[in-house]
Image (tube, rainbow, N blue to C red):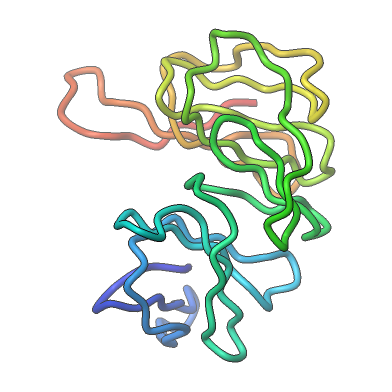
Length: 175
């Protein structure tokens, strides 16, 4: 499990409980490992360099790649999907914007399916959507919902939603 504590990013082995510090950082969050484990994306909210950064775990160096926050790696590690469904290269070069309906709110957070064919999208909007990486087949799979993440086999999506009484977030899973 990857987590943030004491101005750094750490992992904890869930079997042994052993913790390992990966990076000392002033980044605020949204860490995601690249598929090959050599890099991770992080976000920073303070000016002048807010947005998404890529940190190289071997050196601890971080490179700013996009003013957009909250990204997810494509399964092959060559691209990142950022909020508002913008796809950029791992080096920060603009690739394309995924077409979608106005129902998907600006700033929505996306998660790439394990096979690279679909995106789960949710965040500022009231629902979790699934659509092809080309924008096709958009459909609502859960309402309400935020911050979707695919299961490793691509058959389920985990997401957060407020409790029925509105007191906190609960983790939900949908097929």
